[in-house]
Image (cartoon, rainbow, N blue to C red; front, top):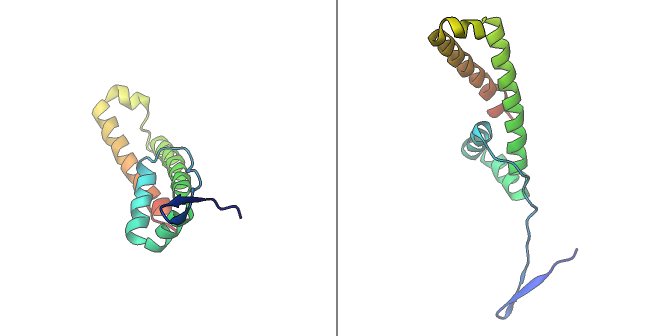
Length: 117
C-alpha cells in the first residue's frame, strides 16, 4: 500500500483521495431513491456513501426507473388508445389521459424500483 503524507505543523496527515464519482446528473428518480435511502434505509445509505458507491447506485436505479417509466407510458397509451388522432380531435382529453397514464406509471415505478431493495 502506497500512502503519502503531508506535514502540517508537527503532524503527518495522510493524503486521502476518494475515488472519482461517475459522471452523470441525478434527476427525479435518482433523487427520489436517494431521499428514500436517507430517510428509511439509513444503514444502506451510509454504507453506500462511505464506500463511494452511492452515486453509481443512484444512477443505475435512475436509468432502470426511466426505462421502465417510458415503457409503461407507451404501453398504457397504446392499450387505452391515447394516440395522436385523439390529440388532434380533443386536446384536453388527450392531456388528461396522458397525465393520468404518467401518474399511474410513476406510481408503479416507485413501488417496483424506487422503494424496493
